[in-house]
Length: 89
Image 1 (cartoon, rainbow, N blue to C red):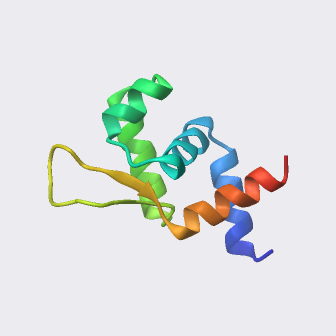
Image 2 (image 1 turned 90 degrees about the vertical axis):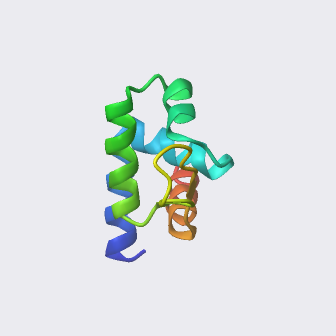
């Protein structure tokens, strides 16, 4: 396994919010508010979590031009990292 993959696995495993958000987004497209309701996260935490995941290339916003109604999903890299985490359990 390459260093980048290992670093991303560590990044996800160090935060339950990141791990749970990535898992939810791998299952379906969601608005930040939906993630918040399901994971009982504040809007600030959702925003910070999504921004970090997006910066790492693990999730993407499908309609970034919108201010309201932004949909998020995992990227191919995000799914790869999630699958590596699942395999290790």
